[in-house]
Each structure stands twice: as C-alpha cells, then as structure tokens.
Amino acid sequence: GQSLEQPSEVTAVEGAIVQINCTYQTSGFYGLSWYQQHDGGAPTFLSYNALDGLEETGRFSSFLSRSDSYGYLLLQELQMKDSASYFCAVKGGSQGNLIFGKGTKLSVKP
Amino acid sequence: SQTIHQWPATLVQPVGSPLSLECTVEGTSNPNLYWYRQAAGRGLQLLFYSVGIGQISSEVPQNLSASRPQDRQFILSSKKLLLSDSGFYLCAWVGTLSYNEQFFGPGTRLTVL
Image 1: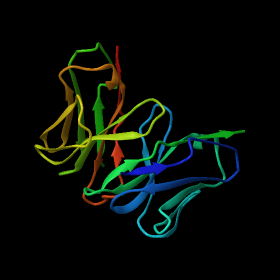
Image 2: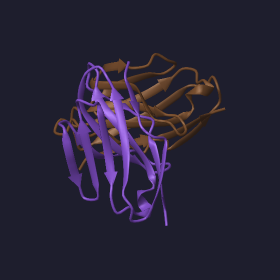
Image 3: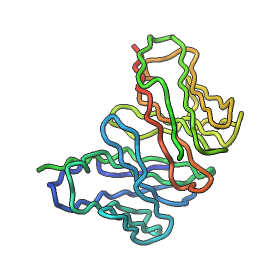
Image 4: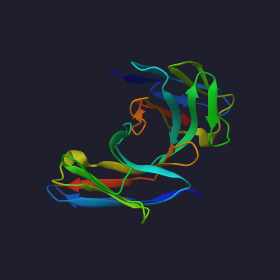
C-alpha cells in the first residue's frame, strides 16, 4: 500500500524555527511535495524535491532522503501568517499522481 | 495567466439528491485535471483524474462520477448523494510545463443533510 506519516499538530512561537517531518511508503516514487493550506482555503504549492538534499525558497526549505523514505519542511523566522496546515505529498504510483498525507496543523503563537 | 474556477462555493443538499460540481481552467491547454475530496481535518483524497477530453480514471470506487466534456472543463456528479459525501471538494490542474506543481481551485464545501 501507499502511506505517508506526518505529525498531526505542531506549535511554535513567532520568530522560531520549526521542522515538519514526513515519512512515506509508496510503490514508485518520483518526488516529494509540500503544500500549505489555510483554514477554509485551497492548498498552495510550496516545494518539490525529486533528488536528495535541501531546497531553499526564502524562509522555507525542504529536504529529501530517498534512501530513508523521509523528508521534512523547515520553516524559519516564523510569522503568525504561517499558521496553517502543511501537507506532504508523494508523486508516485503507476500514474505519478499525488498521494497526500493527513497534514500537520501548525499554530504560531505570539 | 492561468486561473481555475469552481462553483458553487458552498452547497447544502439533502440525502438522495443529485449533484453536479463544475471546474473550469483558463489560460492553459490540455491540462491534467483532478478532483479531490477533503473531509474535515483530514488530508486530500484523490477521486478522479483526467488526461484529456473524455478520459477519466477513478481512484476510489464510490457514489460519484466525473466527466470531461471539454478540454478545460471537469465535472463531478452524483445521482444520489449520501451523508458520507459531505466534504470540501477541490479541483486541481497540472500544466505541461510544470508537472510537479498542482494548482488548486477555491473548492466547493458540500454538506449533505
């Protein structure tokens, strides 16, 4: 089967750094994506890793280790607006479709 | 630029009634289109995807069906809604230039009573 595991909730304070981990099990793997979803809104794309290593985009970075079937999203200099749910998604299977984790709800406190 | 529309934004329907949700994409051609459902506080479940007109693949057998009558139109339907069909329905597309990024529409929040 195919599954993704990520923590259900994380709490941090403004200005801090938080890491959201994701482990996956899938038949066929093309890459790991991260999406952000604010309450009531649609998911928006944050990053995609196809190869091992760290990808940095502003305050957000994403890491992938294919050998460990593991990745993480790193959010630095947290702001209140970063309070949202974050989903990891594996591009895999026979059709290369996205399989989403259940999401991690991040709450940023003052 | 590309945009994706969904309507209606919210919908309350009685059990046993039919359903039709529409999704249209502008500014791109021949996109891959997807329908997802998200239950409250849960992840996204892929329901259907389409790589072209008239081509529909179902990921989860259930009470719903999908159709793609035009290149940039994707429709989700049901003949008789169940309580378990309640959720947030999201349409998404992937373009030919960036297969790794999915763009989501604003969603339809469906409540079946």
